[in-house]
Length: 473
Image 1: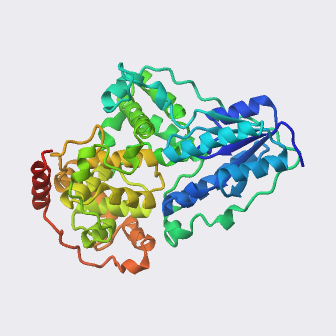
Image 2: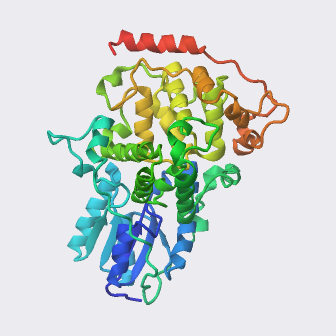
Image 3: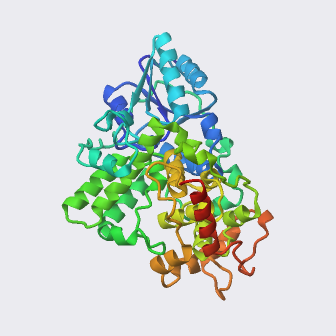
């Protein structure tokens, strides 16, 4: 079964054929290529929705690989042991992969390179999950950027290499190694009945991602500045779902945005800024990984956050039962679709951390369990931005008022009607799907009465401001 000279292509968050530097380089060698995905501890630790979505992405990517004469090999276990076994089975001398930037991923990949070198093999990493490697963007004094706008100014004119097209074929090994069955991994087990609902909304795979980008660039990018704030309008690209698994490369999105800007699309530069906001999250995670688990601003460690994830007001927030329309509509959109409009994300995060004085980690963890576009760097940065404890954070005194935000961005009430069934004679389909997706143990029904808020918006704001000011923020 030996295949001398084969390359094992270890895939993680890069489930695509085009714009894939490692895959393109492997294809150019003409050597046999063995695509591999490993279900390791990081995969097993994913939240329910993210894990389900990864399973869908793997299935889709395997079909793409089969179209060019390859297949996806699935193995479970510690990466170093899995790769050692597979190398012994196939005679492969190289292991290639796309770089990661989280501390655990870096540690695993660094140790693997050393072990491969000791065995006379080659471990080689490639760019591809971000456009700007974190160590290549420095301030004038040599440090990393702690504020977004200077970061944007530093990279906005940089050359981003054009993504390479998908290879037409990969050279197969003489005999394919054994693979585990994706169905046996039960990637959607924790979703229970919610998976049936999510399937209506997820747009899985590279082809869907490229179509999504094309439609956005043609129909929506011109009005992106205005429409991206309107939760009832499909004015955003929706590509975060696909970027999270690398079903499309950020470089592909960047070049589409640049073309639109050159053609005069008014919203194109703002779209590019949003892509760079994602890059900024990775820049921060790489240079200051404490952002993933602790208050980035250390003085916030003394802030009296509420830390009980089972508190009644926290449960009401998770269930979309706070009695605050914008918050509840957004939280139900999250549970039903696995995503949430960006304006909604800011509102629900501000409400939890400020009106309810609850630690941002509780919200971050809930999002990690519910999002199909979960991205560790972006999720952590977004929550700390909203809470005020992170870099480039919203000022402590900015406490979003969900009611005034709703009046401004959804004046006709379309968003709340779409997601809140209570009080409607004929609730919309999306509002009813929420009840199909939630755990039966919640015991919620469309005919339930709307709850009263645990605290008024004015009282919540004043309580938060008093807490900030009493501690010198």
